[in-house]
Image (cartoon, rainbow, N blue to C red; front, side):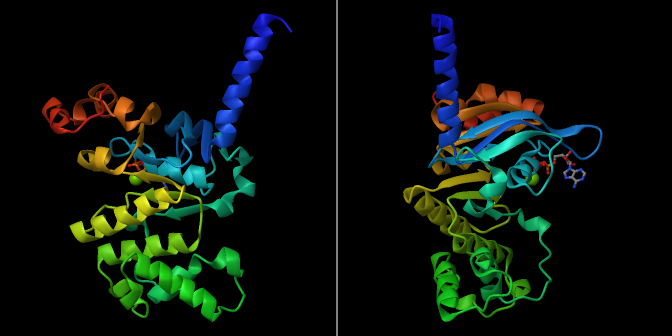
Length: 269
Ligand code: ADP
Ligand code: MG
């Protein structure tokens, strides 16, 4: 090999190692519902063990990106790999908490049954639910402070309580990658605190958390990485270097006033 070929080979190996180590790597992802793409040619390499916030204005394609990463929406083009493996063989390692507004809360189910759904992959749809499964589901409810609500109907809970139950369902899945779509939207301060504590505990166990996040004021407190999107990727990386006035301006444009940006606790740039 020539020096150039060696260098190219080295570069290729380094890129491949980064991809294999990433719990979620997206390449060239384009998703379209109609004529105009909602997500266009996006690459993302989520850092293993990170807490990554996906941010961008309304309609930027954040939810679409998560759904395509889960394989629930078929992209026009692009690939998704989980620890270097195709998504199809790794779906069991991913837990998902959808945007609350997208769920029909009138369906008749008790809280404990919603959490047990998180165990279906382990159970199989027709397997018998055992005492051990119930204990595990209850344990997950305790972790989100909902242990006393196990036998309530899900539709009778407040928004924040419902959100906690869906987090408990994700915990029951014992995944190593957690994808959450605006987990703090419409919840009270106590629930927000309970949820962030659970997410930080997951991170402390070495798991990876990726959340669409609306509140720019809490990015620095809650997350260590950010991914900015506005149909196309704007930037990705550590909060300290990537959550800057420049990247925010690029993602939000005129929708975010300079004064609002000045009020934020930003990365060093
Ligand atoms: P975000 O989560 O960043 O607010 P979305 O991913 O929900 O953005 O939506 C991105 C774009 O795709 C928006 O213009 C939205 O109107 C459109 N869109 C989302 N879901 C659908 C759908 N099921 N059918 C048609 N258009 C959709
Ligand atoms: Mg959304």
